[in-house]
Length: 230
Image (cartoon, rainbow, N blue to C red; front, side, top):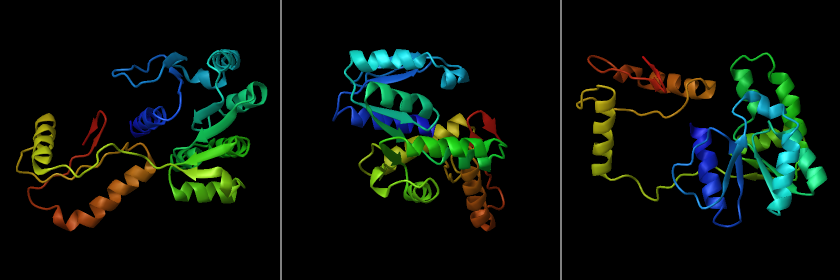
């Protein structure tokens, strides 16, 4: 998924500048060497977010690896990161991919307000905040009362340094058409995003609304969201 790829890219290029140690869940597999050690020690279960024993596990890693800076992805491990900051004397940063509580609000989760206060608590008690775009940064500065000097934007990166050439586009089109049984004469508009996330779904609706007059006759719309196909 996009967020997972974003973390992988972030770690890959951060490790070129500092000695990086990554702690992640057991089911995360490393298919290619990334140039930094990966410790698959966290449980796959959601109960990992409230497991108090990880304080001792991570504290031992911080001591053995002589860690000086700790980065948590999303606010969920905020309680743990803050305890490690206090007791292990590390500099703590939270790497935010969006305002998580607002994401769950858009999904009509009743508990989004509880997460909002916890998210605010996390951001206010770290040493620095990374946001993925300016709207999130401005929201957090205003509603979480953060110091703007402690908020940095690190956008979602990509590795291509130039626009794909025609041959690459044609190869990709043939692969997509073959995979989803679409005639190669069809024009394709590829939207990459998880449709369970309301802003992505709103974007698809906006695209279809804008181009609806052009979607006529034999033209078809394919929406692919992981294993969901319409």
